[in-house]
Image (cartoon, rainbow, N blue to C red; front, side, top):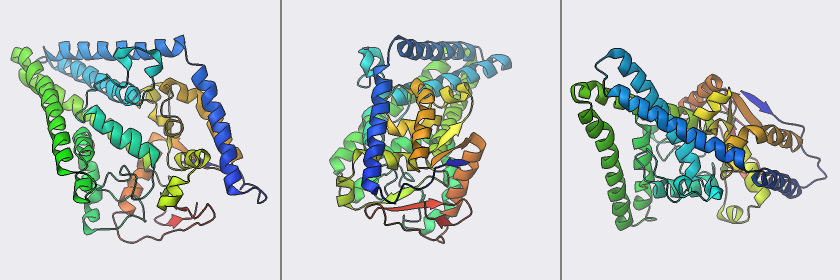
Length: 386
């Protein structure tokens, strides 16, 4: 893992002034790239949609004759690729409103219904709003461990966390179902922050989506396959499982490597957080994955997780272009830019899962940022001051 940072800011410059300067630079950078959107961006997203639909059509056709092993392998691989592209580069990013500026109702955040069990409205609330607003704030960002994992020493430890390495692994192949259940916010009902009626409404909506997804993948297409029904069914199961494992890997590697920081804020600090301070928290609470252009597309460009958290509504194909500028700004402001190859981020993420499954661990405090406390794993089983 690579963490780049310059020397600390000058002691003559207050932290608030530093954050404000950071905010001005990043706002200017965002405005520059958003103003440059045009025909090339539109061509990119429509090309991805065409490739995704071609892969799905080819996969479905091959699985219709999947009694022949080469057809099963080809069909399953194409369908897995199609589902990955739809989930990562299309669904996730379209639902962030990255392509709303095109004015095309077929690629709009209000109309897109992705190939995923969780309903779009539930996803937008828990992910787009709660996670992207309160990124890595303990007690406010429910994505920090998804209410079942302990990913920070500031989160209370329970005996059930001893098993979190096991259920982290088990979650991967059924990730879409885990997210769908998480988006129901049963813990919010227990805490009295969500009404039972709202929960039942959301559960009914999710169940309806799950039934439609299940009928499509596990009933309709196998029936159409006739003699190839069983291998077609297994191909769909495998494709969904592969997509889920990949999505789990990308999301966890972008949020939970050791050098990604977590925060404890008071209500007053959250309410008084400036734009620059929000930008700084997004940088410190995210990690990038290094790799080829193909890898970036397959991750939905969430391999540029830092850039995505800074500018979630920017077209994803722009993240690779903007990343060097963001990294340079981070260096000048003394901010870590956590990045590394997939294998290293994956190993670091698992190290964090294992460490925080145990009750041991030290907490690091820092009070020189308006009382905001931040903690970061050092990758060696301890927690150090960032």
